Amino acid sequence: MTRRPHWRGGERLHRWAPVFKVLAVLWLVLALFMAVPLGVLLIEDDPDARAFLLSILVVLGTVGLTGLATRRVPVALRPWQMFVLTTLSWVTISGFASLPLVFGAPHLSFTNAVFESVSAITTTGSTVLVGIEDLSDGLKLWRGIMQWLGGIGIIVMGIAILPFLKVGGMRLFHTESSDWSDKVMPRTGGIAKATLSIYVGCTSAGALAYWLGGMAPLDAVVHAMTSVATGGFANSDASFGAYADRPQLLWLGTLFMLAGALPFVLYIRALRGAPPVLWRDQQVQGLLWLLVLAIVLLSAWRSWQGVAPFEALTHVTFNVVSVVTTTGYASEDYTLWGPLAYVAFFYLTFVGGCSGSTSGGMKIFRFQIAAILLRNQLRFLTHSQGVFASRYNGQPLTDDITRGVVAFSFFFFLTIAGLALGLALLGLDFTTALSGAATAVANVGPGLGDTIGPAGNFASLPDAAKWLLCVGMLMGRLEILTVLVLLTPMFWRR
Image 1 (cartoon, one colour):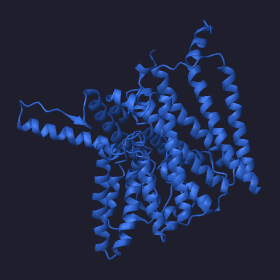
Image 2: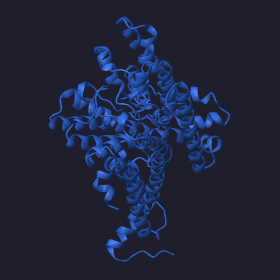
Image 3: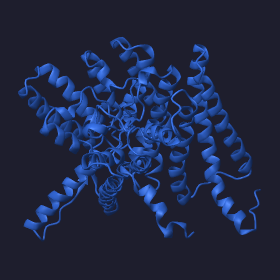
Image 4: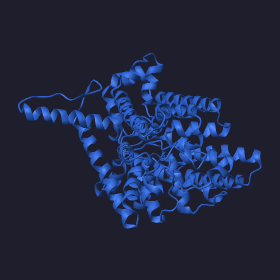
């Protein structure tokens, strides 16, 4: 039986110990994945192998020290510890994941390396690297692995952790308690295993499809990882534009980005004997209708500009799906398509895919719930004595879900506004500051303008701006409220 220390500092340490015990396990998993590019580099006899070996030793050393300090502490996390663990896990993993970029051939500064790793782990897709084609195979693979790990981490967080903390869109599924427990999986562990199996299956299918479509084996694997994770890291400075002359690859990319943006819980249900459930889901229907509307509008616009219809449809579909799913690939510089496309893509930056997927953004369900509330409010203005039931996906919208949507939406745009103001104070122009803040919080990747647009990158931004964007990416990935609650004095009075 574990005895708690009597001195006050020891009591505080005891309260934090379970958090760090779980963190040590997550760091160990990260070190194991670092061994994959290390193996590739050792086979190729590449000098970057030393960078990964050193990084693994640093991580394992930290794991060992943390494990010794917390070896007698049971893992029994309270809700407040879950909030801390959720935030610290993403921050510390991003820090450790940056080490190969510091020690390896790019020899990035600490700021640039952290920016790149935060962008990867949060599946944002913004980059500071130039000459990506010249990186070692191990570093290319590591960029893909970081985003792939971030993608599965987002799904697990969205399905298991955020609903427990009463944050996030998957709380809607928890109104169907019997359906969740009986028809999906009997235990949370079963859901996690099934989700991982589907995630690995989608990634494997993507790698095979890309390879058969004409990509080199390494490129196929990396692009499969970053497509399903809706991350957007590519093995070329031109992003997916390196394959702009191969329409089959653009259509395959569209398919796998869309696959990553759908709720993985519905995949589980579909595989367990209810395939129609995927297409009957209100989130999925809303996302598909939005994509169709945007693609038809912009394809007509491009055709009116004189682009061949099939070429216009291919590039519009790819880039619209990329931005809406917050992947961030670009097959062309769509900011050159004219003012309609420029504004449309800025609007699409905020949308995101479905809750319970790998995509970021506000998520489509929040826009749908806002539309339901607006419709009911208009009805109430006409019939002030009427009572109008609000339902979503066949379930009643409770007050706590409605409050959560309103609170998240307010803080989402408030975060973007504050971040844009901070970037402007650092000297960034209006377009760069506003689109940079939006793309960071929405976890999309490229912004707008000549500097950080689809044809540019974030390398030239001042270091302070990169740190602000790192904060924005992490807040957006953690659904904002998970981080903000840590800043309230009431949270720490316990």
